[in-house]
Length: 307
Ligand SMILES: O=c1[nH]c(=O)c2[nH]c(=O)[nH]c2[nH]1
Image 1 (cartoon, helix red, strand yellow):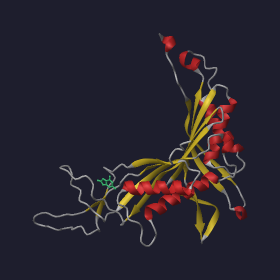
Image 2: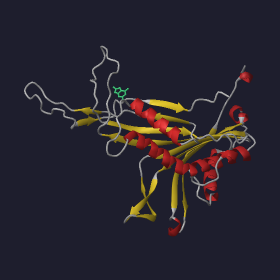
Image 3: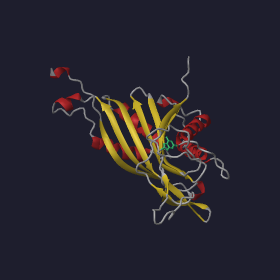
Image 4: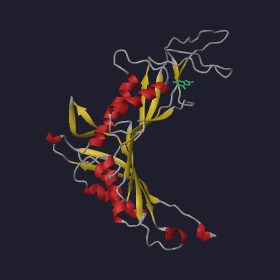
């Protein structure tokens, strides 16, 4: 009976924190620093280690961790997170015959160059908020998948948002409105179309630039023009327009997934019989809360080719 059991295992190291500095002269743009939290997980044929005391085919997770630092050292030129993840994935799947696949996940701590007296500082950084993340899966054949994203991107507007004409039944209390605050913390994931290591563009920074560009398109679509904004009839509609704009603007992005919790700003009305109208809501005083919050998410992709 036991002989017929199947096992699909994987192992690796998580929360490997590494920082890499590239020390360019001030005239060339100054120092560049990245701080990455790396997770590597390999699919590896090391069945005897599960079924017996034979560890002879295990690539130790400690060695996996060490490799992250060795590869960071070897990157003498600036690399993006995505490129670094591909380097790691290629390394594990090509060096070890037993490793058929590697998944490398990286989250970047958002150190941003400071500006002093209107000038970008050559070696000073402050911590930003939203995070660039990536997940790269590399197969031994060189086939790969690159997904990148944003986490913790908090956006809010004080008007140009409403919600009306939704299902109204015996459970409904929420009134229709064309005037409310809308606030969210965007999580976005998008997939690049590269399917093999040989297809990855060589220009350094292309993924990093793309991250900045996607972030801007998401925010610009959420807010609309600076003076008048754009009306949002629902978080659902705004989410769709944000995803659609990313796909329109970037042909090298194949699909976008957005999660946009609706973080409520509840109108405050206080009063009782003796003291009616203690606080009467006039689009001014709110109770902000994220518990509970609405959960709204969707994946948007181009229609599949009918070829
Ligand atoms: O934009 C919204 N979408 C909803 O699905 C929803 N549900 C709700 O109570 N408020 C809102 N707002």
